[in-house]
Length: 297
Image 1 (cartoon, rainbow, N blue to C red):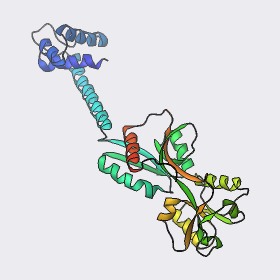
Image 2 (cartoon, one colour):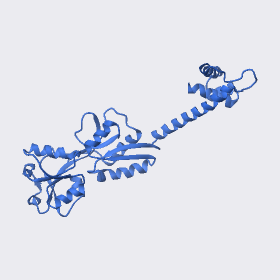
Image 3 (cartoon, rainbow, N blue to C red):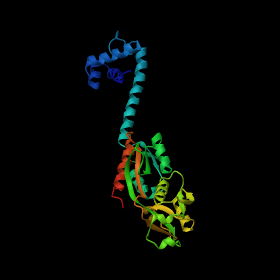
Image 4 (spheres, rainbow, N blue to C red):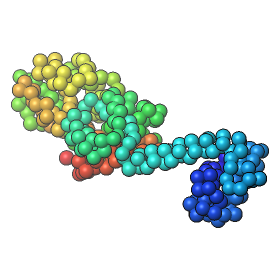
């Protein structure tokens, strides 16, 4: 049923006549009459008793008026809610972030975003980057942080580019060095992150480029625990430079690796060609404001 015809009918009843209704809905009187006739033809019953002067509703007209008012009110509510979404007064941001680096890179963005858009409900998922990519493709979240390169099914926006550093215990023989060749780690016990963390395959690939298979002592999904395990002498670890410096530990030294390809290039990703909500676009804007892209270090 045409909402414009229902609007015209409601105004006929509300204004008490076709002429005043026409002025209210900004169409001609004949167009208003045609709209009312259209509804009557569709339901097969008269809406108005035309045998008496003025505007008098039939029984069918009473039903249609009540339902039309409810439908038009729902339409107005729908348009108002959509306007609120566009104006970021309401909405949902479905966001995925990994454990590594999120507190350093995104906590200030969260505070800024919340201050600007207090009506947006932020629904955060915390997983490894590869799992977050799967959730984006499934439509469970709109945006996720992952490491470049990513598959061609994603569009992306760079957040941070930096080198990966080697963590060694302060008593380790390598601790006195400023830089270490990756090949020197052959046979050394390494502490990697849990399955699904995108940093792991980057480290493994770098070891293979250097001519050896990594010896994995253990894995953990917690940055602080990895640092403590390194401090205890269990093995060597890897962290992005900024996070290694943030999590500085008196029993750990962070060293530069000579592999220029072993990098932590973090980006926000979303489905290529997919729709991004106004809330998601606003998040990308805030991330750009906090993390201006710059050449790799």
